[in-house]
Image (cartoon, rainbow, N blue to C red):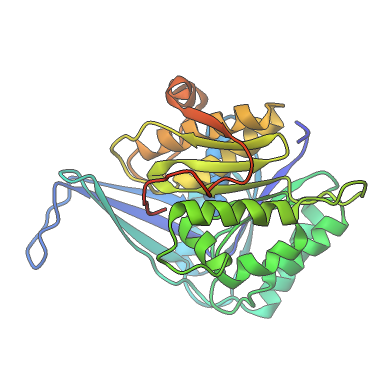
Length: 340
């Protein structure tokens, strides 16, 4: 990816994350909070925040609503982020509550659905994208679709941007993810649960079964030999604390980093942003996989929806275990059962 390429993140359902830190939750009793922090969030915004922490600017396109949406905009401005915010005529941007219990290291997330997005707002978003994105730029469609958005929303926007020479990155779930596969996205990043659904596998499917099917899916999404089709360059399958698989044209890599106490909010976004950052710096996919995994590990050690700067990532690089996987992985490899 060219160093001059602009990265644009799209967040249709942003939030303010309110993280409550306490020793332990006592159900049915009075609980006292040790620490409270608020962070701008939504998966696309998280990618932009993670890029900013690494010293790379991006443009945030987000749909906001009500006083909470206005406050979110002020927070983003105060953090020096470039934004293009589209305001809904009604509704309220969501506030997601994260409860972190220090004694057990448990994170409980209580997420709101968010406001309904209407057709006029989607049209305004499309026009903003067309004005902002140029040939060679990267557009990240990240997060679930809010109420009111058809499941093909990302696919339709992405197809038009690809026709204009942009590269599309997808990190979503359910029908929205399935619809985008026809685009052959530049990068697609499902987690384990999302991959099971995408591949029509039962919830009982083991991680190694999912990995094997994901590898075959990536092979099908690659550009046909001898054509101008860019195809899907990489599929990144995240396995939570068990690391991630990077299916790339240079090889398939399994990477896992040190597991530290903290909150896991935004770890997948840190991994995706760091992958984009590393490729923009000219790193190979092997080096990018190592860097991205170290970044996700560093993010996991932080309280709240926060992202590490380069020195914090660099400190963990030597702790990342990275192996090259030959053939289609999953058939003979034993993976621990995990949640993503």
